[in-house]
Image (cartoon, rainbow, N blue to C red; front, top):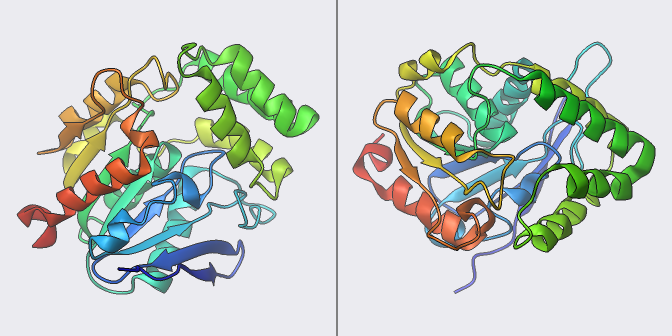
Length: 281
């Protein structure tokens, strides 16, 4: 049975945020990671549509088709949460919904949940990274990656990842291939380079202790460090421990990260949404 086509939307005013919605049923809003686009949360899978959900995703400011940040603003988490609130108001309206995100999107989702504690039926955090502090070496990495993009374009960006991310040889070709694919979808590389400098310096919340205030049921998705060292397994473990009642899942031994498996990840999210604590929220 067909599941229909995604319907594009644009949320204004500035920055205009481009997104898409598809499926019918209880809404799920998905937020992508830095340097990605809306496609790279469930990777084009329509399993959530088939499970009876409306899936709403959008390109963050400066990413994909969405506008760069307006003059005088930037790419920090307060602005990212503001943008998410605009998308929710436009596409969800009133009522509870499930919110999910990968990496930067996971942090944005937490920021939204802390600001809007009564809105969520469930929270899905895929590959979170921020644990309360940012090491100087991490900021140096992001600054150098931004410079590689600004001076060398997509080729420079991919080369920097290849030389500096410490990817296990088993996964190296796959990582570099989908890194190039997602970078070719970026319409505003200068804005993206600025986001690469600003987002890692922004705090989505003050400390891990803040996560104890989260009220919605939560699912945390971890990745193995060999394939995905940029999203440490221990960070996901820390989130699951800090959020009351949160559940931690990940891929099986020898598998590619669950965060990369769009269909399997979608089915895990659908199963989470079907639980009484979420569906009855």
